[in-house]
Length: 216
View 1 (cartoon, rainbow, N blue to C red):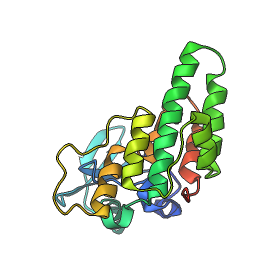
View 2 (view 1 turned 135 degrees about the vertical axis):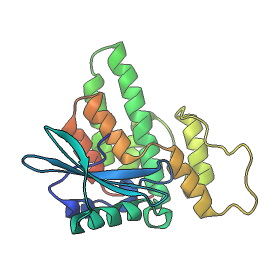
View 3 (view 1 turned 30 degrees about the vertical axis):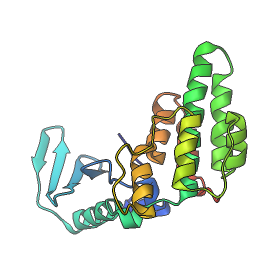
View 4 (view 1 turned 135 degrees about the horizontal axis):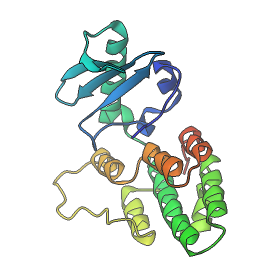
């Protein structure tokens, strides 16, 4: 699954790290760089294992790391750092509402015409950072101030799988709760991938990735 693509590693810095965070829901990641005649894949997992592979028409072979591979590994380490990639609460609300809208729009498209237009209207509201408009389309309220508990309640309203922790850990901090929600609510890149694959709208996927962080 492609998280984001661009001309070089620097392009990843155009996005806030929480939009591309690898942790805590994966075990690592890879950066793929395509040349004219070959593909270079830099792989890193959470245990620190670091591999580089070069592929061509003849197949893949392991290669020695270069400076660019170290740069790629640095980016991935950053994306696996919960402290560096922890989103604000408004971002979690936005992702939850967009997930609900795409799910609802998919159902509308199955039931009759107008589904594609419905997808566009919700994504455009998200792209403007207008969560009130997106919530209005879904006909759900946004509780303020936003808290992990209010996000958990909102998830119930939009039929997201339950976010309530069944066995709360003692001395659980706000950061712990945000990390838990971050792991459960679909990421921006997964929502963008859904738009790209299911709805065949790469333009809308790019809008989702580039949208401002919701300020609630």
